[in-house]
Length: 544
Image (cartoon, rainbow, N blue to C red):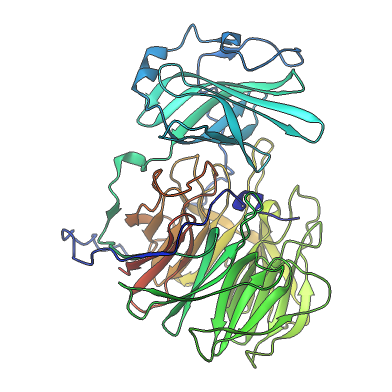
């Protein structure tokens, strides 16, 4: 099962453009106070899952009950008599919103709304994984938004009516989800506009943008930096028909990057991850498994082969640890699998083994990502949780334990992680994806008894994508929240020390996708941070 349908969005190709931002230092900010030493003690926390039920968001109602046969796209069907609708006059007539939907039955749902500033038809992104045109798009005065689309033999409607403004960029109200002219479900919502949260500036903590390079593909998702070159991969956009591929960027002068090449293969350009070792560049392909390029000349990769060969294989992510390459595939159903390659000869990977997790019962148990550390492999198995394997003997991996999410009303996931040693304990920083997903800090010293000891959360409508642990700092790409830098020297209390907001509604081809914004990241130790943004491309910042 493909785990990221929402990554395939309407991101159109702009013309090739490399922008170099001023590298003149901004105002000098005082350094953060030194962190206290951590002695390894903590108080275990209760798992709250990703989405937390905060109760009804608004004092309004969609009056026809479920099962009623009616055209739901009618403002008069909403009872707004107890609402502060006058406050809606302060809402801008355009914007991008992520919507947290609470059904009356107590479970969660989410959607995205985009109303363009130029007055053209906006879009609504629901659980179909595609943006559909809006049939109504009133955001000022009455906040009424609706969309109608056909899926198979069903005509579906999703309708929102605002009740009031509860804070900067926050609108609450009621919604109805209908199918074939019949009310299916109703509830309340909180919509957060995807401007910078909490009244933030563009950047803090001394982070500065050195350059910005638009790549030649529809939807960039990941980057690996090696020998002065950034290898940016993109996925196909099945929504627009655009193709992904590999863009090679010479970053030896980080303030003035130069694109040297763009590469695809016939019928094969959905490339989701990149990694390099010596003269080998590895690309995770949705069709060909792991593609190997020779980068003896780093500016001009030369195709070598794909591994393991044989039938088409969807490899989604990779992790290289010494002479091992771990490739994670979301298929075959139902669990997906992890492949282990020997890369002691980097240009000739040899498949050693492939294995799966024990859980085959969760709603989406597919393997998604991994992190290798001290003979253990930590695999993010999406809804099946965070699974720890002993991989000292690659021919006989053993499942040691797992951390799962108990949830009857939300879509809790394990998506990415980074692992290190703190005060003699093995600590994992783990993040989910989709609505309400956030950073968890886990004590994984004993995989049979993993404990939650810390958390870091931003807006419940946003989500983490990836992270890099460098020393005692954790660099997190947080989609619409941009890049977040955390001091994790005291793991139970992650402390934000810097950020850079990459997401701007005015960026070309921004969409209403939940998974939009800062997505890929590398901190290779050369003094710079390399961030991939789904619209802006490759951003290079200074490392703190």
